[in-house]
Length: 134
Image 1 (cartoon, rainbow, N blue to C red):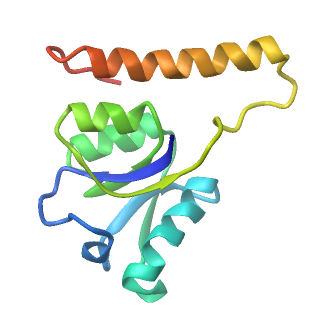
Image 2 (image 1 turned 90 degrees about the horizontal axis):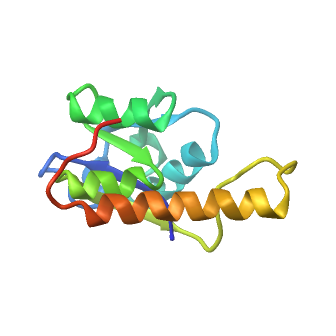
């Protein structure tokens, strides 16, 4: 499963090396922040990795759609939503596992969370006639 992806609608941004000095909107001091830096540093050099800090993924997604941001880093289900709505992936980071969730959840609650997340992705991918908004 993709841990996160840098997505954009900008055709000039196709591969990580195209991201030199292009701000990517991420949530500051999170795994996404550090993963974005890691994905880009080897391609453009640390001095050319530029970040813009946004909050929740739906806010970053909305900012990408309205042109506030040229590129954003998001996780599922926003990756699938972005692809469905015409964006493309510039870089992605993969892992085996689920999202970071509360340690207080019971095994049943944890399973329900993963099932709901997978169902959201499936619903986005299955609905080819409608666009979704967040």
